[in-house]
Image 1 (tube, rainbow, N blue to C red):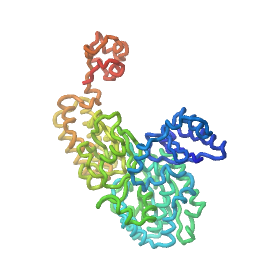
Image 2 (image 1 turned 135 degrees about the horizontal axis):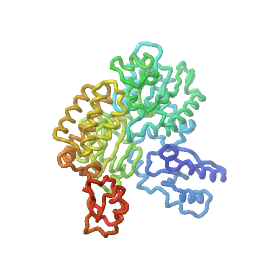
Image 3 (image 1 turned 135 degrees about the vertical axis):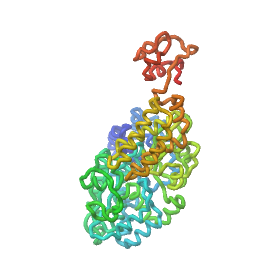
Image 4 (image 1 turned 120 degrees about the horizontal axis):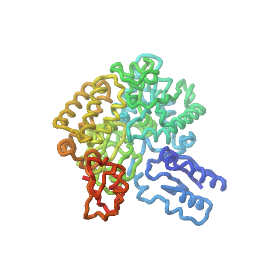
Length: 571
């Protein structure tokens, strides 16, 4: 009997550890054992258990007892936890390359990775290809950096190869910091050897003998599984001296970062690696010319390296056939927010936002109306529902005012205030700014102050124009991409949801009923049954004789939550 339990961070958070222990104990009683797998991407269904190829989802305490009966061969009701065909069909709507092994193999077993064709690409390169041929294959694939900028991977590899100097470095940027993004974390937790193999291949191509994975310390499970994967690769001679009996030598170590968002920028990342404060510097020189320790360095993110083994095994042309003319291959997205089926998906470039949100993500929670999607993280933009047929590629997204980013996709419904969303993301980028340049340090703080004032009911005439003008100045004057893109949430919400700004400023109303200072609570006496529960429970004592005193009301919303008759109106 084959038993596996999904133990990515999402599964563990849902209780997979306890489930695994119970099922493994039962499996041992019949002479077997349960296996660990990573996250398959259906995070909303965790904990997920696979028994003899049957998938059981949302396995709670009662579900475990039914699965135990199933293992014992006793009468059971395990079928009620079995995933239906519709749920499993969501996987068939995807094209999985970077995620091909996630949720399928044990991330702590190098043997299972090798059984799936692991390290064949590295062997093919090292024992049978020249570095020119490897770079040519990456060029033919059209692979671009998946960390956000979308810069051609082959060009960076070639530039690093052509740079003078015997010592060169391969660096993996695993400093994923976007709110709502967890693509890189899931790959590292579920298929760490794919990233290692991608780095080995890149190292051979550029002539590097040392690799560094810069991963945020907030990813303890990813770090632990990476450490184990590196140890296993060394034991098999896949890292270290004379790999595959060749003259090529390469090893990898891990640097745990403190979690600064700005360290996602490559020069800030390098500064952090060198023990300095993570602050960007002017380019050129680029890292390919003068990077870590002033040596030529190639930096790609986790997803980029995870694509490389597949490309080498199947050929660059096969990867290039997927996607659009300007955006090749597939892209992994983290679906979060008001989405019905949150988790990880991987789709070919060129599919639409509608495809991802509605066909794969199942639409909006509770049947509410789809309003917008935030793409590109805090530096991205908000794309309205009327543009949901926009193709997901670098050019099309840029035309909307958003960016591809690393792949975060935060879905919003009709209850989301777009002014407050802009305020939320500006608050994040202000806190994460390194403070090096004035436009970013001071300008974004001024943007945030204006947004906070508007959300607080104190907006005034001229604020919209000031937001727009200040945003453009910040984009033009900031040193790095953090500052240059930080105003994007403001500019896109002004572009598509200007009416909400006007309602906040001139009508002192939040149509989404999200900004508490702009809300008014009243009691509809026709619906009220005079139970006086609101009077008794109001923490501010603002309700007397079934009238809410707005001067005392703190807008906590407790009265509306408690009223069983819908008599409390929020306007």
